[in-house]
Length: 457
Image: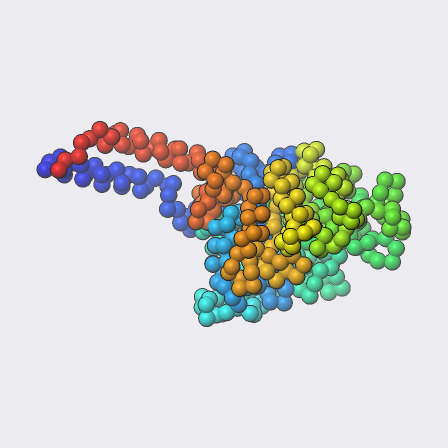
């Protein structure tokens, strides 16, 4: 009987001691909010401990539209959709916004979202657009999902070539980024800023568009990217800054004064980063926060010249991926994050292109954010069907080959240092933590003699 009582006491002590070890059952409110920021070293993205990480995420749009909120909340719950993202292995959520909306927030005006089904989401009743974004960030923190804010539009009515319009100036655009940086500066759930979506246009002849050169012209995206990035990083110096490309870049021996379209290399909106070779972004003391972020699409979006005579992975790398952006990775200049790619599984050329790019991403361990979660992206579709609940398993299976995964366990890896990604994933440094936990448990067992103690009846 004494041995039974002794054994019970030892078990109680053992479990009491293991419960105080902060490796399991961490709650979001107890987790540090300063240890998950990232920086770059050559073409790698690293955490503060020097571990290399990969950002492999997905976009969920809606805040940049007149709805002022994620699309799909008319059919599914916010937490359920975020769970779909994390549980399926995506470790970063790209959230498109507009200057029009953020400009209202910074002025103390908080538009109410529409198209929310309050019957299934009563907790969202009465919540304004900013409150729902804050709720999103808080829930992402609990499930090990990180957030990248994306200034996707200036006005919520549609895309514009530049970061200014007749209604919103460059000063407005910069002030909105300063406001966002201040709002989230103490929460490392928000780790990145995609500073402007798809600069484009033909900055020659009669039309104005985004260009990339050494000037301080109002439409020089390279100049503005440096300017706004420094403003953001003055507030939060640890944010990763995603810098997209432009549409057109002058061929050798030409510049933006030339008016002949044949004197330019064209590419997707935001996808032309040829200018980095001649005019790399210079953020001075913040140089290790720069990530270049091209966009790539297939023939269902537009029949680009490199698709028209047949293509394979080798020809795509030679004709477009290599000269437009992959050289930045190859030459160890900076990391690449493909900010958008995606499309419909058409069983034909577009699906073939998607498989080639997925293989290229996986082979080169590139960072990316897939477009998109939403089914209502007209020319690409999304991971979800129109009920905003059912996952397109064929598309998901293709995309999951590109996600960051622990090869030994098969678990998808989140970017948090303490919270696992979703219900079945793991997190940065988890293997080390688990080994340490195992060592502690074994030492405790040896200490109390549990290993060799016979069970008494």
